[in-house]
Each structure stands twice: as structure tokens, then as C-alpha cells.
Image (cartoon, rainbow, N blue to C red; front, side):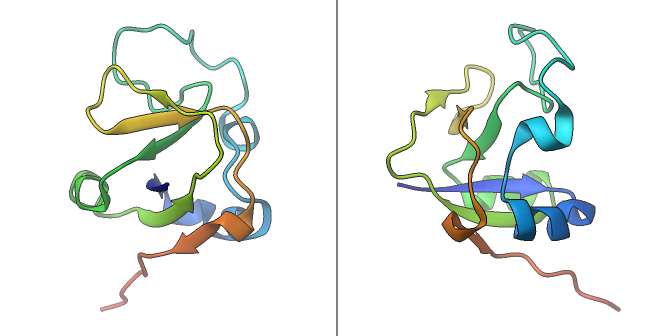
Length: 103
């Protein structure tokens, strides 16, 4: 299953080296898991089924293609097409899709 992840450009080097792991970037206790709102610092790695949605909503972020096959995924109740997984996603499962354009 192919999904997508958006992250700030300043996280690029870390993601290329370590992959996507919410514990590394957010910790495990920033907010309660059940906030009834969109929670970008969830206690899980956030993924989306739509590259277009992420690139429109986060135009200044890097977009990563994620091979999520075999991962236990939970639907995000606050965002249609959103999924979460608590399992770290290693760099070998990622493809960098968005590049910063200098003008």
C-alpha cells in the first residue's frame, strides 16, 4: 500500500537518515491521543492516501511516498484519507517526492 507523508523541510536530513518516527520528532506525550481535533503532533506517524491533498494543504513541506505494506494502520477520524501507524518507518521504505525550488 502506497501512502504519503508531509514534513517540514528542516526534517529532511533526519528523515533521510532515520526514517519517519514520531517519537524522534515529537516525543510520545505532547498531547493526549483523543483530542477530538486535528492533531498534527499525534502519538503516531501520520500518513495520507492522497499526494494531492498533502501538497495542497502543505505547499511548503516535503512530501514522501511511503511503502506502508504490512503496517498496522488506523484511520484518522479527523481527516478523510488519513492514516496513522505507531511503527517507525525506515528510510528504505521512503521516496522523496518534493524538492525545494530556489528562486
